[in-house]
Image 1 (cartoon, one colour):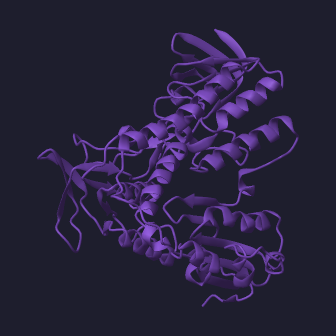
Image 2 (image 1 turned 90 degrees about the vertical axis):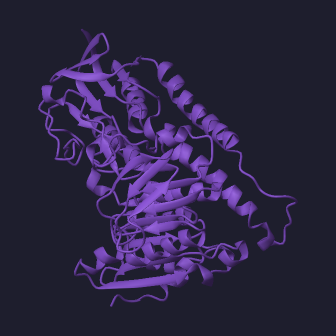
Length: 456
């Protein structure tokens, strides 16, 4: 049995920084990784997908050059082997960087094997037995595969990373963030794409106007969308795949060459041996934690996607910050202090903070709303990027910003000016009275805030 002061399971976004901090605090620390250093974000999530999105945008913009008065001799073609090679190089740099950092950190031991609890404070890592008074679980999640797809050849967000060709017809099951990003990406690479969604609209957790605008953006690029899909399932057929759709309109079955399942995520908690501990999970397998990310078992914390408190790289890193602040800095930070924020990286991107319009309507607050089309923003017109809109919600009584959505060019960067005001707990008039640079998209946020109207 090897004894440590702290053990971290998993090298996703929260794990390496926490391991380094524990080691720097003089704790004898171990970190365990069973597969790829860096976790989902670095290997199959943010880093590779955004690299692919960049390549897809380059292909799309090459096809739009005539709009800008630019002529390209000959046709534009996509070399997916080179696209993949570019993506792989970016991923390799990040993953190898994490591995090198950890293996060269003083007071930190790296184990490359599967971790499993054998007791309340004991963990096996291959043939090694480890124990520590403080244990941090950071095991992330993976694609959820619904019933009806057993025995079918399908891709997930992980396996599609190995694709080095353009599918003839990619069927995407799932109208959420992963499905929409890959759907638009492969349409721009040259695939026929059909997105299938069970609900009445894409992105059912977003406001209806956001969902509708995104649908129109995707349709304008030639993406087929099938909604209200029931009895979903699939089978291999004629070298491709046939998917049961059974929508109210359109044929009940759909045939494509390749299938991507983008139907949600599940935590990697089912093979951790948690039954050997007092740690409790909810019905979906997420580890239950309190506001400071402690589990019900003394001395054990859960961070990142496996705790159900956030499904993003930035929330996982914030989990590290919360735990480190409480353990080492005498700074009682909490998960509940976090303001909801995230992005959907279709093009143009959707950036979201705080409440949706629907949530604001149901909050019994006196709500004001401002909205502005990207077509009314000079910078967007100059760039030829006029799709989308921005919208903001304000509490009329407190003058505090409740939430915002920016669907449009540079929206994923612009949204932070709103988010920072929300964290500062400052009134919306702080931005309304600010003088922004012209010509930018951001300069229209004060204008939008100067034209608020009651939410009817």
